[in-house]
Image (cartoon, helix red, strand yellow):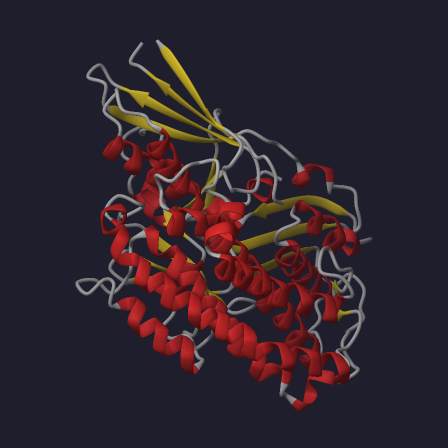
Length: 479
């Protein structure tokens, strides 16, 4: 017997997916699979294009986080040109990237996950959405809209438009920041900081209601990966790759991002279009004999994104974010790291606070309105790697070009892809806790969905909007 249940229409993820729950002879969950069922092919159809076009092309991978792709792509272009971009251009890129993180995290927390957290996992699915949130908690919904608007407005002030701005380019940025627009950002900051403080208080008040959920929501040991500053601080735009284990032991203290292939591999499975990146040294260490387990790469599972970034850094680097980070780390008193994916929500809010503080610092920098914002050069290197932190995690763009700058090969490892193993593990953990072969009600289905929502996946991004994004859940018996 095969039973198919469709969750339609409120899934609150970006993209299309399916979950299969496989039962054993006793009706217990034997395995689960998180299938990403859309294919887009950016890695292939970019071949033959000029690397100069890539920021504009790859930004179209996503309408939620186009800035992340602009940053990684432009940085890959910088590497091909072999230039150091002007210091003001780097600061302006950081401003836009921080604003991107604010708007994306606000969308995730308030409008995609907020209905679960505030209305309840078992609430009526007809109203467990942003409209239900507006009806019951209008001030919360309004704050989410205004916080996201802050990030979008900063992006528009810098790049001319909030979605797909043609502003970040190889060598720097196209236009400087005007004094007038700097003043606009200054005026918006106090409200954004106030909203973030209220959201942090609201989440911490709600945590007591979800102690049972915490136990099975991605609560397992794994590696964590993210960028850090040279002295170990929280980083989103540049820096070094750091990988730590579940106990906080540093496996890769500071790898130059261009060397990422030395430690990151990619596996594939026939039942999903989303690849499975893994930490190669750990996975290869687990190989024994000539016929390894088909899922051998699971030994190299790691997580990225807000939770990972707070786990790999030694400190945030801004006063309010550092104070909140100390509180956050008390969630795991017996461990150095917070290994529970349920706390991605908390980590997002801390990152919003950090980004707002960094924006406030940067707009006061006297050099931020300098006119020199672009370096000019021709092709000097045939390979360029650009790495930055997207809201969802570490993002890799690798371009191989010929002497004319025409792309011969493209490799993209998207943040959501980096979390693929962990998302599959999370779905399995939740399903095994709730399903016994008989019980599969709407509340259980929503909990399984929320396990995916923790990672705020962008499935369109990862396989190369608000709307009706159907997710199908199939429960299949032993036959």
